[in-house]
Length: 420
Image 1 (cartoon, rainbow, N blue to C red):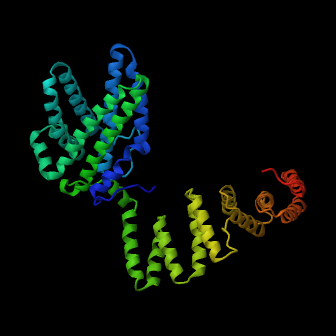
Image 2 (image 1 turned 180 degrees about the horizontal axis):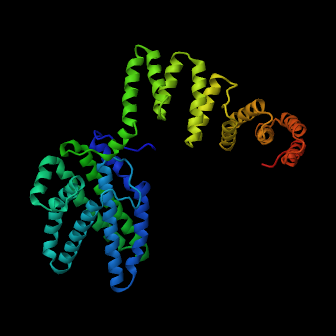
Image 3 (image 1 turned 90 degrees about the vertical axis):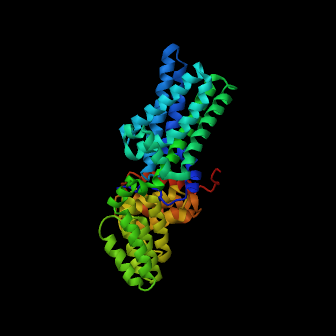
């Protein structure tokens, strides 16, 4: 199971607030802001079609924001993908309530402006309780009960003023954004305004979700992310790592044994591998580091973490310059990655190691040709490159790369300087 990005429930709200400013601009949040902003061009359609499109998009905004609230309340660090709906009933309820509030304020502004600000204040005070109640109870009937509003406010105490303030600030900022948009052509202002209010609504409900997550125990909630991590063994691994560090202060060999036992089972996270290598290093177990390097490189490549595997190869070569991954396909993949990444000397070491260990492999001519190019073009060691090409031609006279080998040899023999 892939690692889940989570947030510790004990993280101070100030840190959650600062990190939350970027929340709508990551992953599914950013995609939603962009898609909904562009979709607001539908509001330019004539007559009632444009009005229906505008209300539909407004509903889609609240639906996604409601999902963000639930996602955050469950302990997830990243925004949900578009289309993810963890609690359809709660999402539908949140969408309906906010559309109703918006419609009521809109009607009041048109037909009875004196009631607009009292309504705004009422919704600012009650909507956080309704939203959060839906998040942790899932019952629309309960969420609409004034008794339940008071209970939510009582449980949060003075902290309840935070989402109230966020609601008011979001409303004010949306109004300001709409006013600022009037100074731009409609084709430009419409998506900009839509992007701004989508961002603010997602941010608002994300921060409400963070407050629920912080107080989940008082509401008898079990965040889903923590449950998934326990099922995946990540909590156990974190606990094991703490135990290993404690044992290592008095008995590093015993700590090493604890990690060996764990890594013989299911796939272990990188933190355990790093802790294991650090203990081996402290004990001066050079052979153990190299043996573990071979095993971990294979695991990393299987998990498509080739850059981390390349870093591990470098580490092992510092211990033993002749180190080489024990599978030809691994050495091949890492040599090519090193060459593409500008790590010329590391790529050359891997190519030479490949030719030394597997000289009759069908891929040996290609690896030799790569080594010759690195020598001649990158390191300006043309003579050595030409000698290597001669050996390759003699060893593989009928190989399909024969023409490329001769062409590179002729170019390297050319005394003219290479073009910049």
